Length: 242
Image (cartoon, rainbow, N blue to C red; front, top):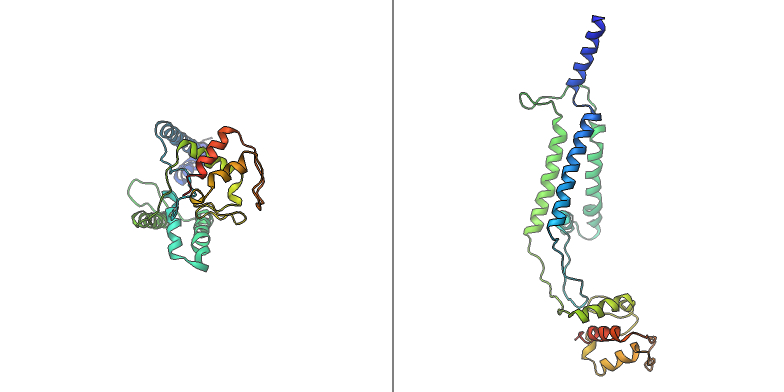
């Protein structure tokens, strides 16, 4: 009886020395931590307003898009790996980093007891933590370089009124950009509309095409039947292209 109790006690002590059990101890701790972080994230999302850029404007020339801060390190790598080397910075290196992270449990399979870094602390494997710290430092430094680098100047397009913005939205929904070029957006099939309002008879052309009157002579563009409100919005947008 006593011998069986001693064996069970030794097994329990061995389990305690080997570390925390995954279930339910470790799993419960991680679940509580994830729940607290989720509640904080929901509070931040409900109490703060995300800063968004302006609505995309095809009239804006020289606009240089930049990713959010958590992707800036990957964006910065494009400056070091150019041309045919671009896949190395955008795919090969991130994939190797993820593969190394996933392979840590398979690489460190030693049965020797880990060392204690400080008195009274749990024994840990040192090299995975060193590799992880170096990776975090690398990504952080690249992100900091990208944040501190001078951003290319961009020239925004003219500010649209609510009526013109509605016309721009209608212009996109009707599929007009697939045929007509505005700014840097290539259409290819129809005439360029970047400076449409500066052309003679521009407003008459809009009424001809979108009021259902008929097709312009020599034009392959079909005639559309729009409501009076849609016609005002689309006319306002097209007449802003100067």
